[in-house]
Length: 326
Image 1: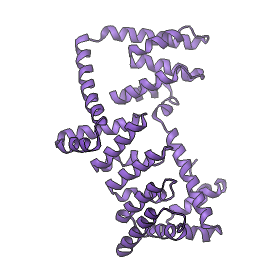
Image 2: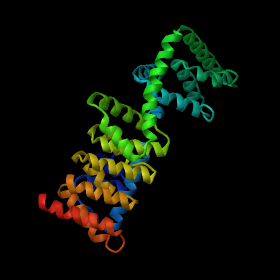
Image 3: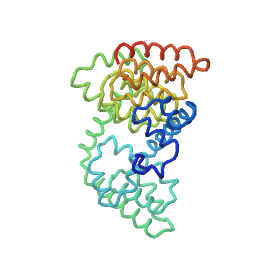
Image 4: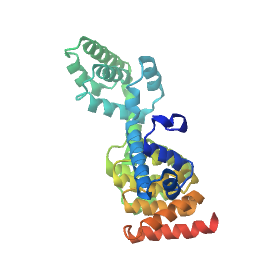
């Protein structure tokens, strides 16, 4: 749903609160305008944050892909690189055994044929005996495409490509297995050319990584690289269901230290994880503005006695610094 003042009649209370927050009103001001308590307003903003988090989770590239028509899917597949192609392959192999929707099942089969990977043959042969005639036809067509493509490929060239891809993948995979100090040493040794390539690999891997431990290391790496190019994906991950992923995402955002993250960091002050709230306060100390200052003051005032000491200390330090500069 598009949340704006034009469709205010159809908005929920918490969504109206969010609009006021977007207008740079702080929690205390919104509470007065709406004749609600500060806690009510905080609850509204937290609910909105959770809703946005759920929306981001749903905005999976493959889920969007399934809604496209055939021509749009063809154009989409032309543009994806080997990294996203591998991601699609994993998604197909995972979904095909549980997918009940006939249309989606046909799209999975059709996509398998377009990608042309022989790993798809096993499940396609199973689908060629499906009770639905359209599914059977799509599966059989995909099987023919894959077998034809496998004959066309030059085995030597294919072997070289696989060798190069495996070598590149092994480098990043090896990096993920290092301890913190060794990862830092690895990053220090990268020259400018290799750095650009490595950043690209890290960004793409973040988009497709399912293993939480590896994802956390990748996010940490993004923070160490101090590149604003990672902010879009980090802002999305700051809404992840996993508190550790959110925490390390906010930490990375803090290390990058861009004013572009200001609103994300302000919302992070309402996160359920105390260390995340601390990270956000420390980040706002550097990139915050007058609005950030008011939110920090309100948090410091209303959270006395219930907040962790180290979080309150971070609030206080950020307030002192921002009072000097805004």
